[in-house]
Amino acid sequence: MEKFLRKIVPKSIFDFYHFILAFLGDLIYKFPSKTIKIIGITGTNGKTTTAEMIAKIFEMAGYKIALLDSVRFKISQKEEINTLRMTMPGRFFIQRFLRKAVNSGCQYAILEVTSEGIKQHRHKFIKFDVAVFTNLAPEHIESHGSFEKYREAKGKLFRATKNIHIINIDDENANYFLKFPAKKKITFGLEKGDFNLKDTNLKVQILGQFNLYNALTAFSVAKTFGIDEKIIKEALEKFEGVPGRMEEVISKPFKVIVDYAFTPNALEKVYQALGLKFKVRSSKLICVLGACGGGRDKWKRPVLGKLAAKYCDEIIITNEDPYDEDPMEIINQVAEGAGQKAKKILDRREAIIKALKLSGKDDIVVITGKGCEPSICLADGKKIPWDDRKIAKEEFYKIYEKI
Image (cartoon, rainbow, N blue to C red):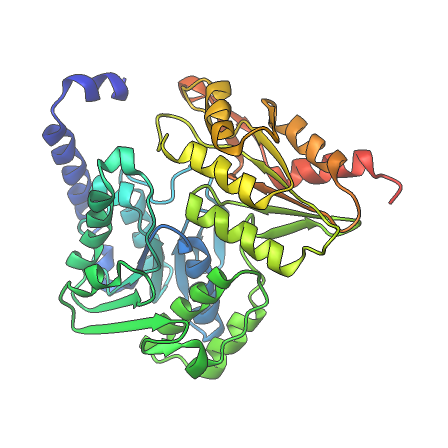
């Protein structure tokens, strides 16, 4: 019904509708953001891991926190898995969440803020104390109309946040975000910025340079609120990662890694990190990937395939979240970039089985695109239960039950 209405109703009407919902949510739940400090994190990649790191630091420092990200909703000691398939839910959800957080005595709320959420005014009438920028790469281009408009949407969080801005100075878009006025601006980077690796001497046990950036982001936020550096470092060193983000689900005789990466930038970083950390001369990197449908960013499908061809020894392209699109057509578009060595297997379980059977000692299987997502989204709103991690383990033990 909504798709039909979008075809006949002017965009301005929908924009006003979402604006009114945001206003009513704040009104109905009695302006909760006025009595809790809110940290908003935006960027293309790293939002969830950064949010989880910040939560761990603040909890270790003795604070009660609320956390809303793509993996879970947490208010003090109560939490539930995010099964909505939405990082930044709408229709009063956030304001109700914040009211529960306030009523539970939480002092801080940590929210992932997405460009799609901003586009639908879900950030409106929330008093953000801190706006955090992780990084920016092309994503949601077809939805926003251009990269510039996508960046502009992210910038609206900074325009709305007057207190503190925390910005990744290494990102080429940093100057765009630095132009917005704030009482305090803090930068971070690997070698420069107010906080950097040399000055902080941070150590993390999770894989990938991108996680060093996530740790620096979390460090910057925590220092801004006066948390002791010893506590920050201890929390980050103990941080074991986020479900479905570079998660090692099988260790021997070969490794199976599940990761959420679905953008070209994130996928390349995953492949690079695995190659640097685990790959030995005789081992293979075996990749299972797809691309989500529903008319989303079709431009990136062959780009994902091209990246797989660059880094992977074996490529299996499979179904991911086709929504209303033909899943085989999506697979074919990814395969255009991957070339002749790509195998196309429509059934995602069969694709994972094939990857496991292709693997030998010291090889690495990496399954990307879904992470810990609990379902595959099909046409007409239908969902089927799914978990890449669970499926990989099930099929591994069927094949290698004697190991």
